[in-house]
Length: 265
Image (cartoon, rainbow, N blue to C red; front, side, top):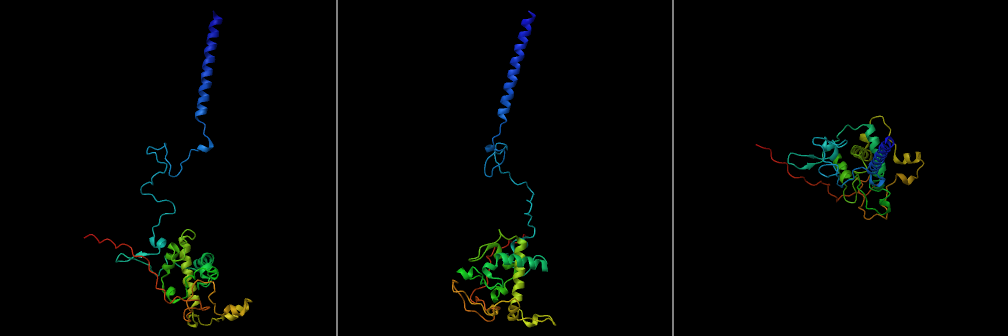
């Protein structure tokens, strides 16, 4: 009798152990996570984890994403709103221009702008010489009269055949390029009156000789035959190199915004 009772207890314990092992197997199988079904949120897909079944979560109120706190709108847009509600381009840099800023602007200008505008900004870059439409000549009267923020605006939004460079160039570098363009205009249109007293000025010919460049390097540059169109050069606008000027081109204006709302009385 005692042996039968022990056998009964042993069988019950075996059944309990088998049931426990089976439950453990079920638990392990239920927790399996394949690599193709990763526990992550996929953009524009639903999710059963949240009550609204949306994987993309709404932005928390009164918060700003890192790097998107654009408190100074002029720094990021290059335009301001005047009293009439229209947008205008001030001839003003949003931060002080130092030699470090100009060197940075020169570096970015040489990388992104010279293929079309050339190193001196006369619109005869290497791409133009290979059949592309002549780029803007920063040395003509129209471009010299434009505000410095206009260059930032065009780099941000593009104009004509020029695409925008907002994805390639950060806002601070766009402003640095705009400052360098202004310095480039001054350097290419300076006169002896702009030279400080006691400073000796070298001619382009002597500079070319010192750099072991051909004599024609300091002579006027001709519009390449591959260019799509060319305006006749204007002596007062083509220095150095008599670059093609655009005398008929009007000053570029940005679109007007909606009028500002009337102030409440």
